[in-house]
Amino acid sequence: MKDVQKNSLKKLGFLAIGLFILNFASYYIYKRFDVTQDKRYTLSETTKKIIDKVDSPLIIDVFLEGNFPADFKKLQTETRQLLEEFSAYNSNITFQFVNPIEKEEDRLEVMKKFAHKDMLPINISLIEKGKQTQEVVFPWAVANYGDKGTKVQLLKNLMGASTEKKVESSVQHLEYAFAEAIHKISNEKQRKIAVIKGNGELEDIYIADVLKTIFENYNVGPITLDSVKKNPVNTLKELNIFDLAIIAKPKEKFTEAEKQVLDQFIMKGGKTLWLIDGTNAEMENLYNETGSTLVGSNDLNLTDMFFKYGFRINPQLIKDERGTPLALASGNQGSETQNETYNWMMAPFIYPASKHPIVKNMDGVKFEFCSPIELLKSDVKKTILMESSKYSKVIGTPSIVSLEMIGEETSEKDYINGGFIPVAALLEGSFTSMFNNRVLPFKDGKFLSKSFPTKMIVISDGDVIKNQIDKGAPIELGYDKYTSQYYGNKEFILNSVNYLLDDNGLINIRSKDVTLPLLDKQSVQDNYSQTQMLTVALPIVLLGIFGLLFTYLRKKKYNR
Image 1 (cartoon, helix red, strand yellow):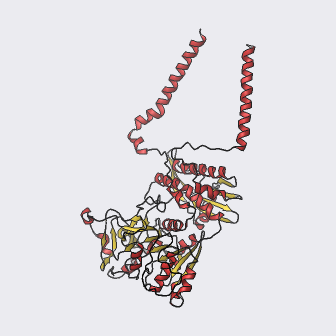
Image 2 (spheres, rainbow, N blue to C red; image 1 turned 90 degrees about the vertical axis):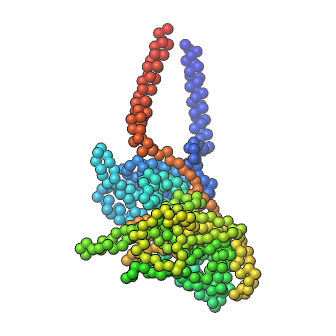
Image 3 (cartoon, rainbow, N blue to C red; image 1 turned 135 degrees about the vertical axis):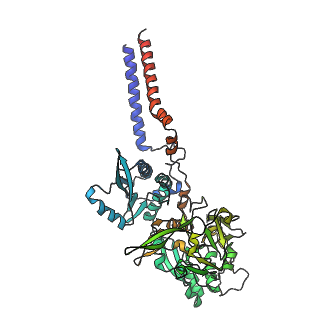
């Protein structure tokens, strides 16, 4: 008996020593293991590089706290686990979950404060013990680093999607959202964006929202091509200081000298974001007595330039059955005008056609009078980012567009050999100058006939970047004040800019696939009895069998 006690004490001593050594080693050696199939908790190398640069306290306040359904609990859990990875990798990063509404009487005041910061809460229905109540959820986080701060949207706004789908999409987006936010506040602005002016481009107030957001990451300034007429060499020199040029919805022709300035900016490696209308169609032109307008080509004198780069924007319109709602007055009720919404096929609601990081896991974008993009054979790599639906077709110009089109009845036969028409494309590689082997409009001693490797994005609708105006002030890009619908326009433009200027691979985090083990509610409902047996009865039966077997074996052992 004494020998048994000695052996037990000996084993206990070895165990204590082993645990001490293990705890001592774990203090100096840190390792986390991600056993998930999709490696959702394994940070990408780009994220790690961004986090490594945080050398002083960075505090993240997450407002996703409170009493809400399981879907939001899942988003809360995934957010917490991701931030735990951030904090474990760099101890300078700390986070806390905060309930903005600690006192019920402060609810309205808190909601106003968040709305003022463009962090809109959402109302959800919660059923507890047979009672339905309304709860407010703030799916936002705020990151602060020194004197700089930025907000992080945790719940993506996918129009028409269920809460479950929104949460699943949002979880896919979490690492990118937080990595981008940390990159934004922990790095000084270096890259420069030029907003091209002088050819009837959109006024600043119509691109104010996207410019305000871009300014958080980049330096932004205007370049007016009017100066080309007096001193083209100096204008080109000024433009070459910038890394990206945005050309948003021009309406006036470009001169040959202006085209040379843009061309040589591209040849020297400059990136470009083209938002070009193929026609002169405008929604404002329909609001007249006839409700119609004659649509023709939008001749900007850029066709030869685009042809040389490997694409063409045809002067046609795209009519798509998957349109966006159009609100039209249907009568009056008292002193207020009553509106009714119709499916407006000339303003397609276009979902991303590609798995490219720019558009992956992104909501649909609202286009308005867009035109077909024709991709031509060249050595440049081309990626279609967005295209019309299966039930779409091309309308030639000149043609009459009328509001009466909302009442048209169509069938599948109307779209035979149509559909899937490109409206946004990415081009990457070395471009050939449109002035190669041609007489130059002005002398340039540093002329290049072939570009350094560069990239450009072409969108065949200038209205994609255009925000609406409410009471003289710009509102968020992608929000339609007439129908109260949100679209993915802002995310699309920001992703495009980030990709064109991205040197550290931040945009590639969006390619990461995360699969949530969500419960199939329809399957559970269809197999309700079987599900009950598996989840309730079976565990009890197994536990009973285990108990009886354990008791039997114990009696058999000690009855000997």
